[in-house]
Image (spheres, rainbow, N blue to C red):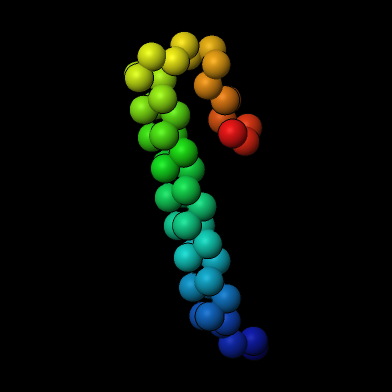
Length: 50
């Protein structure tokens, strides 16, 4: 039976955390831009780059 690759699992978990944190940061940034006077139609949709 193969041994579990804990380093791979840890790396994948770290990458997932980093991705989630970045998405949250972008959402906060978009929300801050929207509330500062920009119209909601001009903000990029989820998954679009700025």
